[in-house]
Amino acid sequence: MHIAAATIPVKKGRLEVVCGSMFSGKTEELLRRVHRCVLAHQRVELFKPDTDYRYKSDAVVSHLGRELACQSVSSSSAITLLASSADVVAIDEAQFFDLELVSVCQNLANSGIRVIIAGLDLDSNAQPFGPMPQLMAVADQVTKVQAICSDCGNLAYVSYRMSKANSLVFLGEKNEYKPLCRRCY
Ligand code: ZN
Image (cartoon, rainbow, N blue to C red; front, top):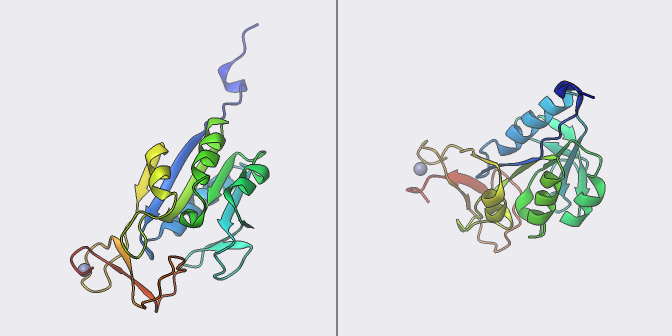
C-alpha cells in the first residue's frame, strides 16, 4: 500500500549552538527560537543549570526581559531523563554543565530531537568554556552573536571581568563584567 509522504511524521534531529560573550543576545536568540517552536505546537523542554540563580530558578530570562518557564537541573544526565518526550530541547548557560552534556545532546539529536544550546564560548580569561568547544564542533549549525565593546563601540568578542575573583562561575552582573573587543581586552 502506498503511503503519502505527508502522512509520515518526520523527526528531524539536529544540534544548534548559539554562542558569544555576555550581553551578546544569545539567550534572547535561544528564546526567540523556542518561542517559534511553541507557536508551532511542538513540545519544548527548556533547561538551565541550577548554578544560575539570577532572576528565577524556574525561568530563563533575557536581558531584554523575554521570559520562558524552564527546569533547573544539577547535571546533564538529568536532561536525558526529563527530555525523552520532547520535540525540542533547549539549554541555556550550557557552559556551566559537565562535559557529559556533549554526548547527552548528541544522543538527543540522533533520536530525532531538535537541540538548541546557548552559552558563553569563552570565559573571562578568553579560554574556551566548559563543554562549549566540543558542542560547537559536533553541532549541525553554530551561530556566534556579538556584543558591543563597552570601551570603543566595535564588536566585542570576550567578557572582561572587572573584579579580581578567580571563580569562572560568573552570572552577568552588569557592574562586574563588560564586553570588550580584542584590542581593548
Ligand atoms: Zn574595543
